[in-house]
Length: 134
Image (cartoon, rainbow, N blue to C red):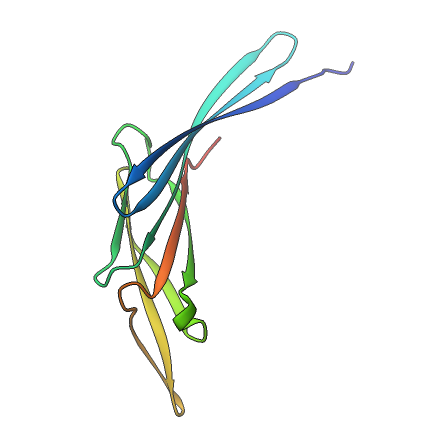
């Protein structure tokens, strides 16, 4: 006997302006419907970006948004003056209320590589934080 399942995902977007850039918070609601069962699951998703500041940058979340530390994905985009540089990114801490990110630059000097912290404004850091489960 075949069972048909209706699978609907709704995304509500909330955007707020911050002094350092923009932050977008999304509430994703998943509804699974079968003949006898209806299930609704909520999941939060945060998309944010900031110019890097020496010493590290902190992405903060409302305290009620995540029940466990979110899964984070970090993307770095060098500014046009640093297109030929190699950057490394490290997530220092990740909790239900904040994620701290450090960015490093690799310098090639002859046969060795020297890694130092990236300068302020050298890269744009984008963060995607979401619940571990949907």
